[in-house]
Amino acid sequence: MAGRRESVCLLLGLLPGTLAAGTAQPVEDALFEELHRVLGVVRETAGLEPLGRSDALRRLAERRAGDIAAAPVGRRLPHPVPLDDAVDDTPELEERTVVERVTIVPAGVTGNDRLRGAWDSPVEDAPLLDTAMVEIGIGAWTAGDGALIVVALYATAGPEADRETLERVIVDEINDVRVEHGLRELKPNAALRAVARGHSETMADGDFMAHESPDGSMPADRIRAAGIGFRLSGENVARSRRALGAIHGVVEEWMESPGHRHNILTPDFRETAVGVAFSVDGTLYITQLFLEP
Image 1 (cartoon, rainbow, N blue to C red):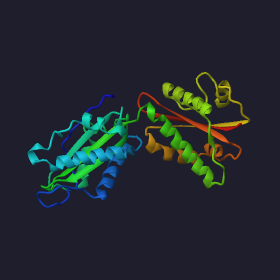
Image 2 (spheres, rainbow, N blue to C red; image 1 turned 180 degrees about the vertical axis):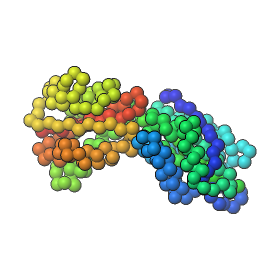
Image 3 (spheres, helix red, strand yellow; image 1 turned 90 degrees about the vertical axis):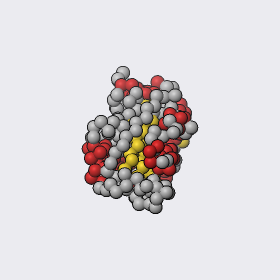
Image 4 (cartoon, rainbow, N blue to C red; image 1 turned 30 degrees about the vertical axis):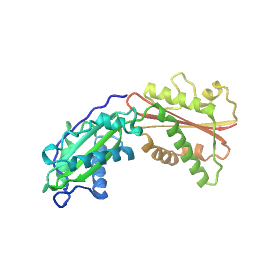
């Protein structure tokens, strides 16, 4: 199990909901959008990419926020279920580092400016501005006394077991783009995937992104070295701080780049392979190879 830590904070500054005494209820979706917007601004100001939204993290955050909201005022924290135990019971979060922040806003406190100021604190912003964190899930409930309970869960990138999922998603999205442009889908090539993964691992280990490897080899060289014959080849590379949440954005960026777009939409290509790798700081490196056998 990867190391996990729990961070519990009491902050003021969110717009509280209104609810009759003695009941607890989830808040409206508009609040989630405002929270994500504000946190996105803080990340952008710090020069960081937006965090991807995780359904698994949100479901867990909602459960924990609901538990806290339903508890008596004097016994809301700490949560009766340790974060480690809750994460262990969530298969989608296996082997990921998860950090929790809890915000309790007393009834009557108003003003999103105070929310923004609270998240701007360098100390309190540790998980939000942690470059290893790539996804977020937020849960919010209004307690019976009118207090607003917000639980934010942050998670690092997934384990190596996620590689095949990420690779498959990229291939599927590239094929969707090709079909939209009247081209045939590309067939996956398992041998080619090993080459793509090898280059992504080299980039992740060396903290660089380029078509040329440190040994001077280029994409065609690496394909030939693997014993794969071809008449035409191409390569797209990318890196991102996010995992699944980044895939759509990566393909969009490739389509906006003339060279990458050319590879994706070349009619002569028949086969493809995607290989991904994570660096030690959680950065995702992506290599896609295209082939005309």
